Length: 359
Image (tube, rainbow, N blue to C red; front, side, top):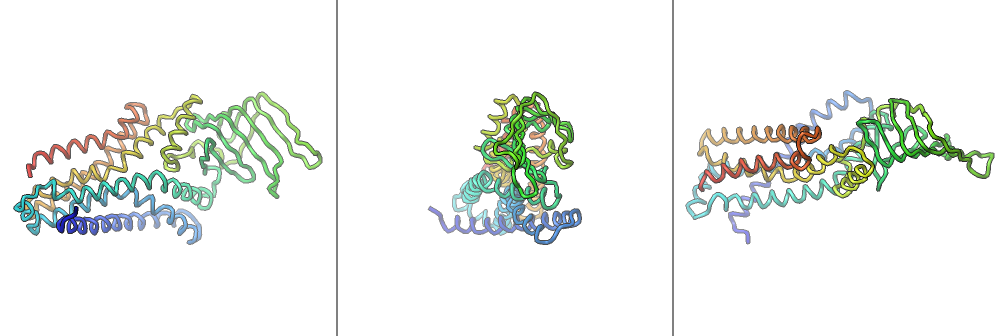
């Protein structure tokens, strides 16, 4: 049951948490909007729709920072006003005082995990569609993943791929649908595999089906090898493989397994899968680390110095997190370690500092 002190602490934490997320989101948007509006010659309506789908992704990324800011400023304010001393004199430990904050962060972490798994892929797909199709005007670079297929569109052609190794430019199970100006299907090309060399695609073991108005039945012809010259926007398809942020965890697992069964490299996707799970709890880990620094420096300038140190550690976390992801994607360390090692290391350091406080 929540006490008056618990409700007071939670109220202060939420104020600082939302303020921190709002301020950092506003700063990011101001810089990003200025850069984007100068790079692309598009209408304001396009930019508004783009950022409507981008803002939720930004907020999700900044929630750990907001949790850290909320923890630091809540406990520092209590420390400066002697409220922590009063709590300690009542027999409350630092762990008990911090419990409401950590409980709220735990709840936020669970909600972040749920939103990142169920809602953010939808926003990411919409954002990427607007970016590639309406802003860059390169629809061939936009892809979506539906069930077990990757779908692309370029001009009057739509095609899907069963499996894609974007790094090597190799795909399996490709089907291309060609339409006329009235969007009537005129040709269907299927192939077992394809090797992509820029605009030149080499197809192996497939069929070509023509839908001619003069004939009542489609005409189908098999081929062993066939070379297609694709449009310019599809020459860079290797740079637009389906990103993990567009997939839920269950979809990502199926995607990884499907590509593994096809003999394709899934290392980067496996790292991203573990990173998506671990990042949701980054706020809890960083807040644990921030707690000892907020009370160690007393009520004067040392407290503010500790806050600065803690914020610096937060930025260090992003560096460590990115470094481990890079090591994982290069195969130097296992995917599980790449995703979870930063949380384990920072969590271990936080535990060490907390044990030394003895409060």
